[in-house]
Length: 352
Ligand SMILES: [Zn+2]
Image 1: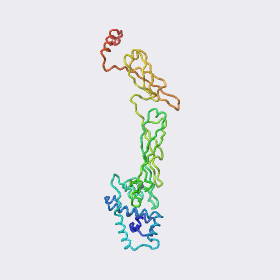
Image 2: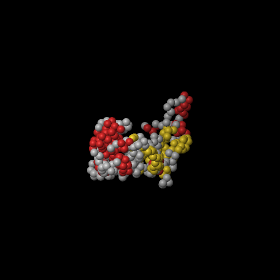
Image 3: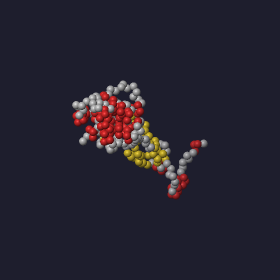
């Protein structure tokens, strides 16, 4: 049994059964302004009252529900009730609903305002958005278009991906108006079962995003229409991806060339060696000749970043740095002593 059939919905909104859609809306606006929980310190009473007028509004605005209600209540034949009886009946109706659970409020931003902004055609809008000042007055029939919010995400890519372009799968969390209650949170006075009274639902969406070749650090890629949904003819928001290019502690970049510094031991430098060197394409082997000096540069051709479009690649430039051990073992010390004895090098001779 529909509980609202016991209520005089017209009396609740302070209108007569002849009221048209425009009158219903304007009556609701007036009542809502007065009883909105936000302007009544969120008292249980105001919440209850607000629920009631909202329910009355929703039913009377629904043409088929209103027709059914009118028939069952006998409003089709009888014109307006006398105010006296209507009031008595309305009172009874209020007491009938006292046991229903009042809606929860008070958590963070008032979701009441959020939800009812839509219904009230911006009645409370000045409290939240200061922007829309000079918009033309809405007609009672049309909901104000609501643009969806933009969503901002960031994505981190490697330098080689920045040069060649890449794709990323991003997880986007959308907040949408609950499709069942259309953001009203309550259906016929009961908590919407779909959104559990929050008026919103969250939707995860996985998107494959193409990041173009040559993208720069901090670039914002706009993916149109992938923000939050717009309502009543409002545009969907966009998704913005801010590109971050991963810094590398080992490699520095110059165009397609990759630079790095590689430590070698004194004996490797003296005798020459094959050493393993990391590159952007994995580990590679590099030969250093005997008598390599600290700071000497070696070019490894084609081991820089590949530009797939141009079918070319940069080089890797390795700067060798001779590094001393932190300490010497007794044996090493002994061998250096030996080396000293046999060394013919007169390194500071030309300084005089
Ligand atoms: Zn809902």
